[in-house]
Image 1 (cartoon, one colour):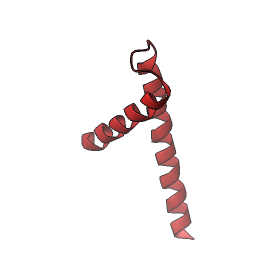
Image 2 (image 1 turned 180 degrees about the horizontal axis):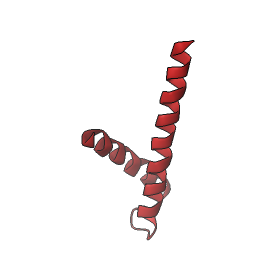
Image 3 (image 1 turned 45 degrees about the vertical axis):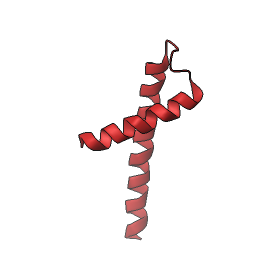
Image 4 (image 1 turned 90 degrees about the horizontal axis):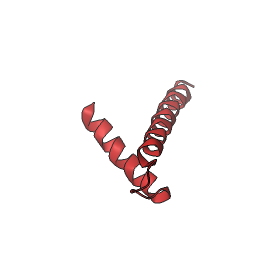
Length: 55
């Protein structure tokens, strides 16, 4: 589980760095927000995929 989260946070860091400078004061806050959005999107995608597989 920790390996998956580390890979996810590396991905989130690079996505956030595309939109916000790393030395800005609110980089950590935006990185956390993007991580929450990405986890939510993965969970929604997984639930829709499982619903789609049942039909």
